[in-house]
Image 1: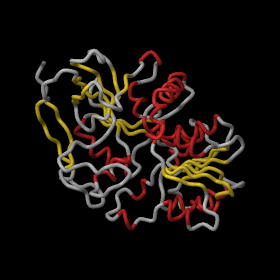
Image 2: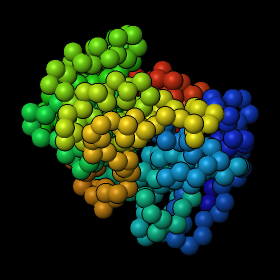
Image 3: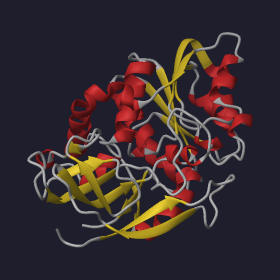
Image 4: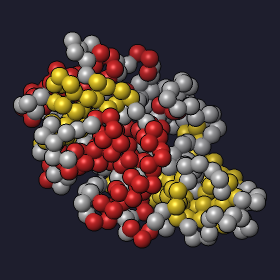
Length: 341
């Protein structure tokens, strides 16, 4: 086995509110020797996603918190560079949850590792975005929790991001009227002109309640929740009887010092006279459909049917700043880190 030095970003101390210098630090250590059945993967692309921020807190949530000194969690695309397994060959391309590091060793029976079918023709990094976990999240949350019907009005928050991008375009394919919510004129223009939504409301314009009401004259039948806060409060009065609300997350609160004090979408929705059908969901609920949905979305990417946007940071050194910017909405579309070719 060749000698490799692995650089990784680990949780040095738990952030109090926004991430500060010293919270996440770079470490370097030699890659361990492979045992029988082990596989060594070199990271090519790293995904940055909002869910990573709550996991840095010392609080039990829907997923365990990251331990102090542990590598920051995250999905990546990598190439097998050494293998002591018949299941993986050198050169295989895979998605796995290596976290924020340049190399990863895993046993060949590790869960949540999938080979990429390059014959489909989708770009590798798409398997971390609209053809990856965020895309599957948007698709499954919309289809299996939102259950939209043709002619219904579907509202998507964080509409220009990878989750909203897939949820909205899928709803359009089903014959729905689709309204996005995004931050800034540029993102709203992209959502309408390139993604094909019927309208997009700019929550930064200062007229969220009135603009959303004007964009949804017949009320809202499905609201795909990504943001929380003022966006949820603007949506709530417009929800029709029988409305469904898949709750993917509420990124507006992820930098809060005390998550327990946050007004969540659950608080807002349950306070209504007629609360809509709503629940939090995880894409892993449909893990048995992982490959089927990935192939569906990757095929739409390759054919040009599924549009999307990406923001790319170069190198692991820039991952932390890119992540901090993403939590403030500075990225456009899926936030990625390019590690190697």
